Length: 392
Length: 247
Ligand SMILES: Cc1cc2nc3c(=O)[nH]c(=O)nc-3n(C[C@H](O)[C@H](O)[C@H](O)COP(=O)(O)OP(=O)(O)OC[C@H]3O[C@@H](n4cnc5c(N)ncnc54)[C@H](O)[C@@H]3O)c2cc1C
Image (cartoon, rainbow over all chains, first blue to last red; front, top):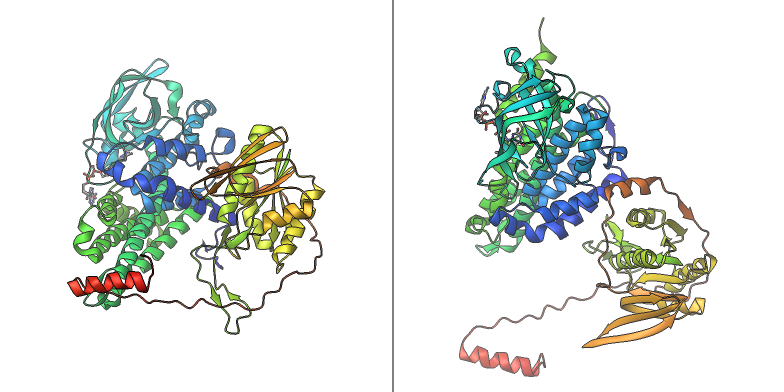
């Protein structure tokens, strides 16, 4: 418990943060764990779990109490997402996207009227939120989006489609990035709050996924949707910068999700390695297995430190883009590796559904793709390094 | 109605607890402390009875300063106020005397406790507090109904239920299954942070029992593994008859 002031790290969690971790852990163990396999198998959206998450305040983590939220910060958000991901990464993905992308975006850039109308029900879990940047033809290169918004009196008409959107189907409110001025490229992108009661806005294809199966991923169609001009977030042309800033926060949460997933897979491997006997002794007494476990744990701890440091910087209002990308990149990659090693330690049993590790493995791969692929994180980090170390 | 919910701070069930070499004390290592699991039911029952009948819920713990943590949990769950009586090293009677003195001071109509604390498992609290207050006590209750000052309590007994009636004021210890403790909500956790925890002077009582020695139970691992030959099966039946004496 000491502070390295120059690098900005504090290792101490407050008593409330510990209490929140305990609450999230108990909730995940009691209310999520028993249903993990069912939702994974059926791909059904876990409405009942989200209803309960909403009651506890887990769907309005970053929103101040006067707007219906819990008024907490990035550290608490990371704690909650980590603990849920330890049990079910797919549920954690929904919690991360709802809180960090949609709800927080509207809160941070929306007018008081938009906050009242949209943020409050989102923060209280009465509705679920989606966030649409990606399109069929533009993922990493989000600036190349095709969706347009044409001004028409006191409305905009939105036309286009969004792809792979978390809560595309179950969410009734979405933040949609669209080009108000295509000639300006990225600087011509604006962000809007669009809701499903507006004619022409609907979900089409629900994806059938390898992992994160109960998370609702769908495409969204914007078929000449008339959106009131008051639903513009901030100013015209700010949408791309807003989206990047929102992704900075989102990446810290995805890092936390990765840490939780890796922790869950590691715990399963630790347990199995002590129970399974081969060559007359538990697996863990075979040094190759023990060393694998030691490395897995060390990598999780390192990822956790990167994650909470990025969250801590954000809560202090300091720049954290590079730290967020580093945390997301490292944590997601060790999550994939840890889940894979957890299967290896389980041998054949790891490959079948009676054991939990194959699901962690399937779920883990999304983490190196969503909210910016590993390659994109490296680009962000390298760009920021160049700024920092530029020789004259 | 003033309801007093008594809660204790105990080592986590997963904690590995040892005994010092001379047997005079316990080695708790870095054991994590938690709200005694049975006391969660006591808090929840207090909140449910308040929701039905009005009044207020006071959460009380007799213990070290660190135990304030569980009072914050009680506040976050919905208790109206929280009190700590800072005293450690008391025997069961000493704790009961302190609870009884405080219950009397606030004129509690209902004192609720968990059926046992999972640390020393003395099972004495409800009956001793009842006796000290001169009011009835009912232990290990799995259902509690109150109508004006009449109380109907159910207890699980082997193969059935036992129904008891009493009047308020009353001391009740509760059993798992009586209710489903609620989770504290995030905003309540944050609000509980700024609520005051009142500290009340302990009453001095001379101990009635002294701890003489702690001892680790001798593990008897007398497992026998037999094969599946006819002779083994005959031996198995013989062992069940003669050694295990179960048939
Ligand atoms: C389950 C799931 C949920 C999602 N939820 C959302 C959501 O809620 N909202 C939303 O907007 N999006 C969401 N997405 C989309 C996600 O953000 C994109 O899939 C991701 O950004 C990558 O885009 P892409 O799939 O088009 O891949 P592409 O951009 O086509 O990339 C393909 C490959 O090329 C690499 N690549 C691309 N450009 C470069 C480059 N310049 N240098 C080096 N390598 C490069 C990539 O790293 C990747 O390996 C979700 C995706 C999934 C699978």
